[in-house]
Image (cartoon, rainbow, N blue to C red):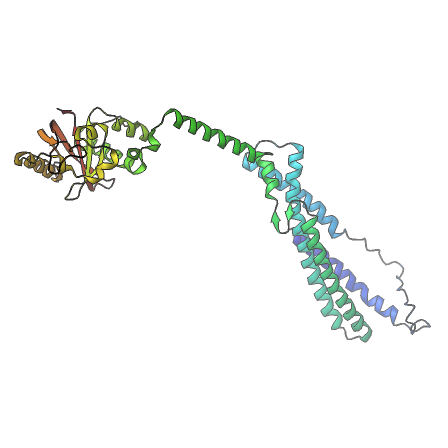
Length: 378
């Protein structure tokens, strides 16, 4: 709207200039002693009764006033819309100067555009008039207008980059906006808060060495697997193994330190182990959690044919499309032989009672493995 208003004002001024121009041309062509003199140019006289045309307000004054008003409105709208805290007078003035710079730059660009359009129309009208004197003066004024526009453009560009507050070339003074909305020295406050948080985490890790974050049995993948185990236990055994509202980190720690043995193997033919809690590792003689990936669940079942058959039967029950769970009343297991034992030496026998097996499903309901829960052994 501001650009349209400026264009209309410029067009009115141009129309007034064109109406007055024929009178000036007639006065310069009148015969007289000074008509052939290059050093004295007759001054056109104004006929009596001609109304005086008031001087139009300058574009710079209009741009400054409009820029200030628009900047204030913009700043107030942003503050009200963002829900930010009330600003001090100095902070509000700083924000206004930023948007005032935007408006000033837009006003300069619009003024240059209007002046270029007016100069082009004036040049076309002057050259089409046919008078030799008028045509030559028009060409001279046209050339001067172009040079003036070039000078004005370069000067306004430099002044827009250097003098307009809140602008750096065509960019935005983001630091000023940060200071207004976030306060001064907000970076230092953020860094101080981050350092304080890191110090608290370090202190917590130092006082609880071997915490959940540092253990291989508590990584993100294992946490997801255990969550699926809990969901499947509740679905197929009709009872929750842990409270539903327990956080993930607490569940992982609770299952690791549980008084029962919990193992999980995948759904491959080899039934490779994927998880074993602390009690399961001790029961089977496994040295550490990461060693489970070198074993399969059947490796710990006694080689006796009946024990092998019990395991195969329970595995088939778990895979059954209607049952998905099984209980082995008694199952004889073998611990892993101690390190350095002769080849072929078997470990000690462990007798487990009421061994529960149930299928573990993904979130989509597809089988991904089997969980083995042992609450009693000797």
